[in-house]
Length: 381
Image (cartoon, rainbow, N blue to C red):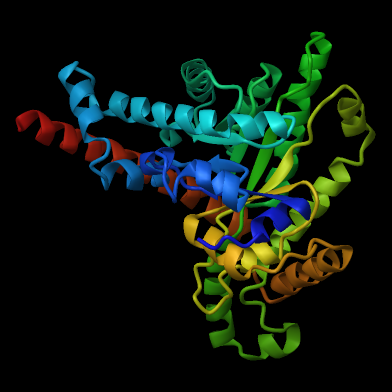
């Protein structure tokens, strides 16, 4: 990874670069260690999800001794999975702790996702969240809660209890508005009980690249059927993801300018930052730093996989791009998409939200299955 200061400059422009990866190897000292990434490359937080842990645990032998030890103690596969994830998150939190403290609790967070098979079960999710907060027992832990309709009460309740929350799997501006409302309600409930708002952090994770993947697929089909659409409205491929995020940022600006938010901020509340997630480009025709370069502005986070961190460190462009002009253009792109016969709400709230929940649930089940198989093999040796 390059030693340029692009990531540091990105933070100075208002976007905290977080790493969208977590595996045990990086918790050890060395050139690619998490400590090294923080101190040298300017990484300021970390996110994980079931797919990341599936890759980390199932495809590595570094966990084998721990799995064997737990298995010999009679621990079943799913409980082993959570024990390993909790241990990794605890260690990562400890490595980020100095940054968490020096940044006045703005950064230095590590996110741990709830069991994605419970994404539509409010009470079960809330119960697991409270258990994980107690098990991890670190002030810079963020619990990741999906932005399903059933997840919104979990967000509100956790914020009301003083738990920092990463609201994940956000695709639509309409759902984002509901997330902001749930977050503020949680803070308001704390105030009503006379409890402090200080130190309760939250981010709203808005997924980027998948919007282009789905929108482009629909546009390819529409353009093949009616090539005149490009002449009428322009070629919109590769533009919807950034436009959608720009409108989310516009909503963020509007909501944090309201008297409702100002009253909470006056009591010490920290702003819920938009976090740009899924920021590696899936289409090789697009620049590999597209979803970082085009989403730079104050009070944001961008969580990037290793390859995007390396690409941005090497050749990313640091300049504020979340401007009034960009937002005006985003409205034009979204309007042209609708005039082309496409439905952005169907893309985001229906297809991508459903697929997002399903993909994480599949990854989680595969992870448990892989650990069960590894457990069996290790015990048989």
